Length: 219
Image (cartoon, rainbow, N blue to C red; front, side):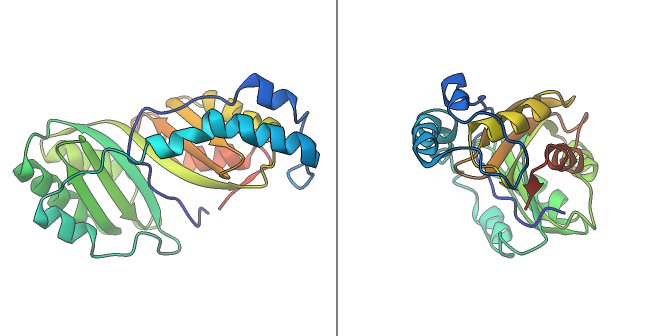
């Protein structure tokens, strides 16, 4: 089960690792086997940082100037609590602070939700929750019942065992083939995968299972 998933704030970023970087690493035989020599790993790291992995800095922009009520709700639980999962939804229909408060209240009312924050400016709703107590479909339903619509969702998953571009490419290919996945970004340097998906077609559990089936392990 996923131990650690962190936020990505901006939606819609995703790119496959450049082919040039992949060529430097060859093929990963097993998840435990090192895929690149020191020299080749250095080249791959530079190429990846300039391409796929560089998106991390870009996504740091767009933080919501949330209302006091929303901010207070978001601060009530630690974001990195072990065993908790995180997901961000792009929500249409929000236009003001009252919308933020209404949606935040609807989401925090669900059993298992430890933290929720809605932002009318960025059109996002972010949650920290216990996947053993609540499912993603309940979030979509709660958003709809509040008078809004979940257009898409995004999660960031820590992935252990990746050591080169070929590893990243293997995970990327598997995620791209999964129905409902709109965009994906896999970075072996940062040891993570960022996935934007249709919450009506696929969920976090299926995404995590797909990554695990590649021979690497979500953390």
